[in-house]
Amino acid sequence: MGVEASLIVPTRNRADILRLSLPRFQDQTVARERYEIVIVDDASDDDTPAAVEENAAPNIVYRRHETQKAAAYARNRAIEAASGKLLLFVDDDALVRPDFIEQHLISHQQATGLVVSGPIVECSKPPAERNPPAGWMLGRHSNPFATGNASIARETILRAGMFDEDFGTYGWEDSEMYRRLVKTGVKRHYNWRAPIYHYKPETVRRSFFDRIRLEQKRGAMGAIYYAKHPIFGVAFETKQLGLFRWLDRVVDGAIGLSDRLEKAIESGEEPRWAFMRLLLVLHTEIDVGRRTWEQLGPEKRKAMESETIARVRPA
Image (tube, rainbow, N blue to C red; front, top):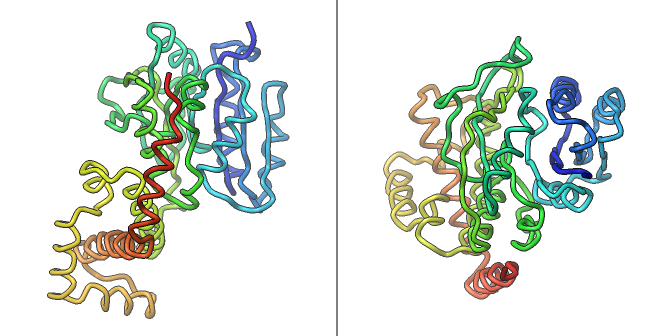
């Protein structure tokens, strides 16, 4: 029968969490010869290789980058190494039930041409049960291609042009990928019986300044996403819409968001009020996105749109 499904697991500096997630990936109702776990280590400088070795098995494929890239690059290298007809995208901090792979396979057996997603249940402690509860509304979301819990035929990903490696840092590479997948004719399916428990311990929760750095990346990648797909939906999604930019300039002019952010970064003191922190986070994404958009220029943006259209092979 061969390998039916390949779990695609990018990772970086998550050795301790891998020691929790890998045993669950390996303890499945589907026989091990029917699936593989493809781990791409994005230049970790912790003991990630040791964590993988501790869970070594014939169905584990391990690749390591010597220099840090980004999620799009790592997933593409995993896809190239994968041999399964079905690609099942998960994060390294996904804790799954024993029937996780089986549920994704069942969905694809019931119909072809699907992109299947499942619940993402946020948790700060690993579930005590090996088979924690699933429910119709538990962890429900509307993201059609959340790469923390999504599956699709490998051939469809290849036909859509794989992940775009212009997304060289955090943000939007999965949403952009879905835009191209839609052009291959895929249909969405949500399987609430295939949840992942997204483990984020309290000790790794982001500070305000971590969030600002993240939004700087997200804003820049949002401009690239919009350049590749210059449509209203993407402009709204990435806050590149002219109305958002205008509102940001008005608020910035009224209460000095840019100055407040600069002073906070210089002093290392978070703004006291939660609403002000929210305004600064939104301002960061919108402002960096606007500046990146302008730096790209009309010729570069047009070329990026044309290249994106050309990536998708007709069925």
